[in-house]
Length: 242
Image (tube, rainbow, N blue to C red; front, side):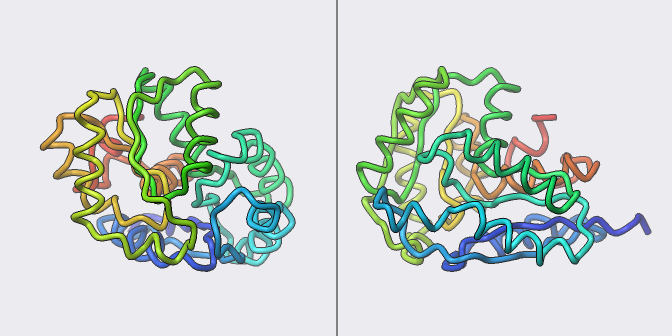
C-alpha cells in the first residue's frame, strides 16, 4: 500500500459542507485522508467585526494544532480573500509554511491558478453572499484581469445558512450564469454544496465548473505529490488541469 498522505484543511467553525464533501471526494484514494482544524467564522459581511474573524492570528493558531498531525499539505479551505484581496491569502500561505513547515495553499489562490493554467478570462460566479460582498469579489477579479460576465448571489450573510441552500437552487444559479457562456463557472463558497453537482452540470452546460471546495482539494493533492486524475466523478478540474 502507498504511504499515507495526510492533508489538512483549515475550516470556518460554522461550516457543515466542506468536511463531508472533502471526505467523499477523496474516497477513491484510500491512502489519502483529510484532517480539519476550525476557527470561528459565523458571519460573512464587510463590517469590521466580520472582517476581523479572518485575522491571521486566529488561522495560524488553528494551523499550529492541525500541524501536529504531520501533514503533507495544508490549505485554508475558505474564500475570504476573494473579498479581502488576494494578497491576504498570499501572506497567509507564507506564514502557514513558516509556522508549520508544511506546503500551503488556499481555495481562492487555487482558483486563480486554475484560471491561469486554463486561460479562462471570462468567468461567472455563483455565491450565497450579500450585494456588497459580491461587488467586492467582482471588483477584485476585474482588477486581476478577469471579466465577470455573469453572477448569481443569494444575499445571505449567516455562514451556517449557506449550507442549507438546496441543490435545486444551486443548479438553477449555475444554469442562469451559463447562459452568458463564460469560460469557467465558479461556485464560490466552501459552505455551499455545489461540488456534488459539478460533473452533471458540466455535462449539461459544456462549461468547466471550478468549485471552491474542489480547488482546495486539488491544490493539496498537488502539493502532496498525488495525481489529481485519480479523483473521478467530481468534474473536469481533476482530470484536465495539471
